[in-house]
Length: 357
Image (cartoon, rainbow, N blue to C red; front, side):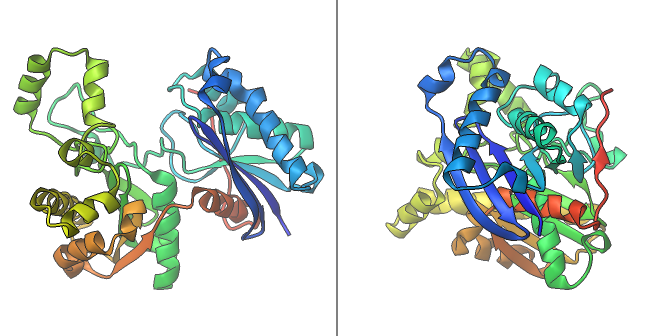
């Protein structure tokens, strides 16, 4: 049986798991204090520190390094690439280490995994990183020739839940037309056509519905006037739209459970804002359905907010005419990473090769 080491680094923690086949053997989240990270000038300088913490955890739970079949990691910021499972190689680690496409803690995953894999003589993979780009050419065009639409979305969870929905429907993911809706701190709605995400809103850079922490799409003229009236630097202003927008700005919280508590206590504003967010999600689903010519095998609702029956029932009320609505709440990134590696190890999928350009 395959034994996998799964590595998912975040800004202040490193999530780890050991899987025996499909079954999780152990998992943990190692938290890193601001003080412990302050000694490092650059994110990549944390590599040995985080690797040592990983090795200590494996020793604590009695996992022999030589029992591990493969390492699989969260993908970092790389050039735009099609979805799939990628073998981590020298080209990839060079781009991750240099921060050529951006610096983020997720870059450490491939670097730590590649180092361990080299040491143990085993393969290291990444699965569906956030830079997955399968947009059709017409989806890249915006209303301004110097501003292209780009693909940044919750690719790992989109693809994992699309495959799970395909299992429920009894068909291969590559044979279906699905709309996948990730309902989290950001909201991304993707049109999945035969295994490719041919159109999706850029939830990070201000497209689509507003969410717990993001403003989503805003009227351009009003945005320009606001930009000049507030008198802040662009970097500071961006925090109003990503991090302090959406529910946070309207209602003072990014926790949907608190918003529902306000509604149950008779909060009229909370009710209106909640329904407005739900309606914006529905409108984005409608746009995605147009990309698929209205031929939709299922709509998949996933992410943390999909646990809210209040939210999913409103969405279903508006869009159930499109086809079956499959609710798969949460996002288990560690499991999704493990499943990707297993598909390759079992010969169900060929690993892709990353090249620098």
